[in-house]
Image (cartoon, rainbow, N blue to C red; front, side, top):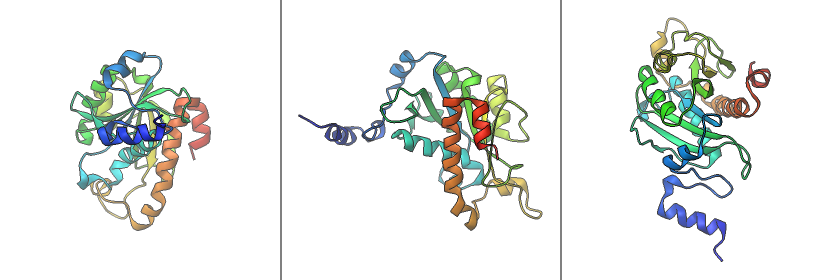
Length: 233
């Protein structure tokens, strides 16, 4: 008899980008995922950022880093969505073997100020209403290392949120706001967000990423009020 671990290992050899580690829930193909889903049980979790390795370590890309952590927890790797406008992971969040909620993790292939189009395309494809969309993004007016979770509100000059609002036709989606603080001295905001974290910040960054991923899981499982009481520091 072939053990589950051996089946997983053979699956990795055949299709490494679309299989999961033992104990996690493998992502179905897009058509199966959509056919099995309803608008009542699918969440779209979008990490905002800019694509490409030159942006990977920037403060503006904290959203990408958090959805990468969520994908790791789900035991799946990102792959291109059929729209060609985003990379996605489809599966369930929660303890292995538990019937957790269906979740689509997404990273736009467009730049930050054009995030809305890909998000709208995914929301339409997976039949996800705006009130089941979670955007993870950097926030200048919150100190580095802290989080704020809310639903709706203004864009506060954030071009990714502005683009999402325009494309979705509403700003009433959830936001997991990861603080990056204000630039020091007279440094321009654009230069600050499009630069790498400092040496001290990089040591603390994994803790912020982990906490933000926990906040997403809490938001989906327990709702806004309980999540705010746990994570809004």
